[in-house]
Image (cartoon, rainbow over all chains, first blue to last red; front, side, top):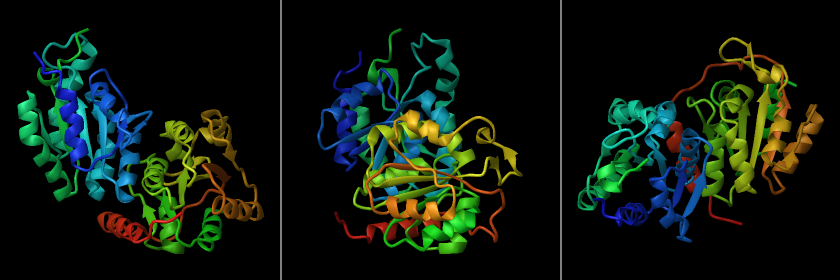
Length: 171
Length: 190
């Protein structure tokens, strides 16, 4: 049973690491994190039309001196592949990716499964360090370290949020 | 109008503005005709020029940002027009070099060679300030306006076909770092 406080923990991890600009193409799961960010006057959330557009916006913001995070579903990671490689990795522009993991345990929609199963391998292929916390405790143990690593190496890093953490989407 | 002349007319008017250039021809023109630390060159991620410019404009609302995009590239990211229209950044101008072809890859026609119009798409997206200069005199006036007045602006410019002269310097990481440092050095204002 997922701890319903998971979404606030994710929002807090980002905010306490000086991330206050967010871009998103929402889904049911990351919207639970977005609720905390929308309610916070210190945070700005841009809803983009596609996830790679959101990456362009956050990359520009980094060049302008602001950290940013992209909240999306793993289908959005699929949309982002070239921009992650040819912009963020090639130019060393860090960004924090927060990816809800559809297409794995408990999935009801066959269309979600191929990219869901490929998610970690896509990140690995691009050399993007990622964690997949299965509980709030697991998230809190690793989260600050992951964000710090991203800005140390000036590259994207990713939180992949599995159904064990979030409760997933139940059809 | 040729793109190099149109680029020169802008470069001659710049002070502390940011210019973001599209990969390929626009970046090569800008490097050759007016290299400066506040130029943000792009080298890949086709389509992202306007989005990168929007992000800079959001992070630094006190600095004016001018994007030099291309028709083929913006056609890959038309949603960017909608996001710009939604957010209404006053400090952003999107200039589009529209030569109606994919010049870098050999001159294959784009949709604007046929029935599509950036001006109409921008208006449809909700951009109010859409300017279409038809010659160098009008373009000069448009530059004066986008460098002084609140935007956002979208400025489609029909330019002749032709490859930029010279060779790109592709120090991708170095130029990004130089730009970030230069912008950080522009004191917060307005």
